[in-house]
Image (cartoon, rainbow, N blue to C red; front, top):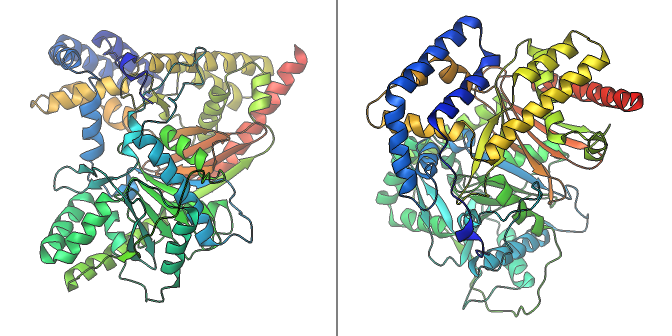
Length: 579
């Protein structure tokens, strides 16, 4: 599993001048002349003032670490956030087979998924996973495998100023939630995994319990982090049973949520996996496996310690037939109900958290577009970059709907570096703006196709910068954090371009590969007017887009995106006929 780990390169620290030049290139298409003049002056002042000193400090950090200059700053970005996790790091993936076999029960599906998850954990624990490879590069270089250590037995703990992470030393149990009641299941005993039958018997016992719904402790993990930290500390000191139950949760391998909901379509399944009512959940755990009453399955992810590409490999194994080779039944203890002692103050917090979550759910819009006119096969036939075309469609759809050009980001993994995570690439370029205008102003197909090609080339240059460790985000994040921690506040980080444009994108996008066991996924949208979170999976003959928005026009955007994709397809067909 780690055979290539020591040979992976460090994420390089870019040159200060190069990053400042690239930064101006990223924001220039989004600024008017006066704003660009102000931003250019701020960048020049930074290069002539505090910038070189801060850069020298980052060089010292890079020279003294075995991994990357950015790691500690990334941890800070995740763990310092005070927003509720459901507004910050929440991701939901609905597994393939959204409509499972009618004869399959909830506990049968859940038992199979739990069994496969345990086997995946076992392979990680014993370093038996084959190293990942970057399939999008010609020589398929190996990727960093460290993130797999953060999937299981881990929990995010709320803190007054900053959260922390706790890791179980040798976890052997999972938590199952049913009717808002929590149960601990000790499934690994004497270094042996249970059989599929053992697991289902435990789940059947839980489902057969006729206890009334518990108060819904899980919804407390949707609170703002400082508020949750205060309440959790109070709960722990107030009653030893609360402390013990929280310990069970913190040390669990993962959480399984047996829901009574019956989602009827993909949109409903995504919304149930994303929030539900919050009571049958524990959002502080990185992995929550969700199985509904009609045996649909999903995963809710808190991705502080890992990213979607790591989860993607895990999910690709979940729907496979369970391999019980060498498994022997072992006596299992009955499920252990977790106990809670609550005060009127705690109950009031539960009720308020539930009301706040309901309000958030009411604001959140989820739309699914299953675009079937063409997919990856058609786009590859045009010898153009598939992802570049899709990113241009996002920009064109937004400009048509809202009559403005805004900052758009795309998440790109950089796991070919030691402990590499991801970078947010800014996809709006001078070339993409020219392409959009060619379409909106109904220029000739020849001009539209020419600007399309130029925009895709510019997009690929941005991606190449990222893959070479020369993107802008991480470097600026480290410079800003290092400056602020020393009481230095350079104007470049107070300037309109940085505070209102670069760090406030209106569209967040991320994609996953097709054929990895995921039907669709969604994540939180930008918390601003006309902001959209767009996740997508490009299959050979179709594309699945999931759009979330709190303060936008999700349905109207979907229609604009559908039109933009159709017109791009027609342009490519016309261009092919003329060649």
